[in-house]
Image 1 (tube, helix red, strand yellow):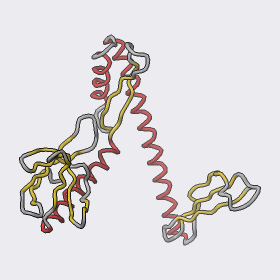
Image 2: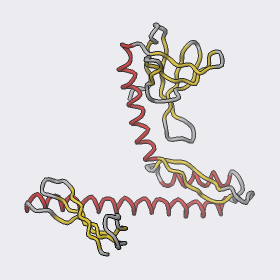
Image 3: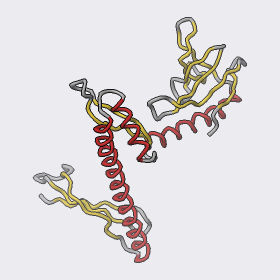
Image 4: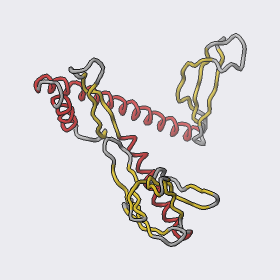
Length: 225
């Protein structure tokens, strides 16, 4: 992903965009420099005001937020730049975690929390948790024991969820292959659900999900009454 770019306004003035990480947030923000000032984009989408394509910024001019008009020749490259940032933020949000690591012993309601990435090494996360606790109100020995329990329990839960997802994906792959091989639909899963209300005096339905030979899913609802 490109981290900086230069462009022009509709009137030919230069401005610069730069991608920057934020503290305590997974999302990247886009810094904007224009008119000798620095701010950030309020939106990662190009807007339109009275038919003019603009970028909404936090820069203030005469007590009003500045909207930068976009030169037509730069619109495509600006959209490509912002689209890459939006896609990166989707991935980053999926990997970002907030974990409560222990109660504050100096408060009746505050919890100590840390933020980290799911692919961070577990020992680094434990160290982060220990620093959070000992930096306030916990003794080191107690903090190390408590932090390790909390973080290891979190990673175990994440691993179990990943294992379940992998098992489900492998099962679906096998069913798809069987359906394609036999030329007949194959049952993927069956579960119970509340009735959809399409019939009277029924409360529970059986839902059966099949995979057709063409790979499409087919859902069958059976009313149990």
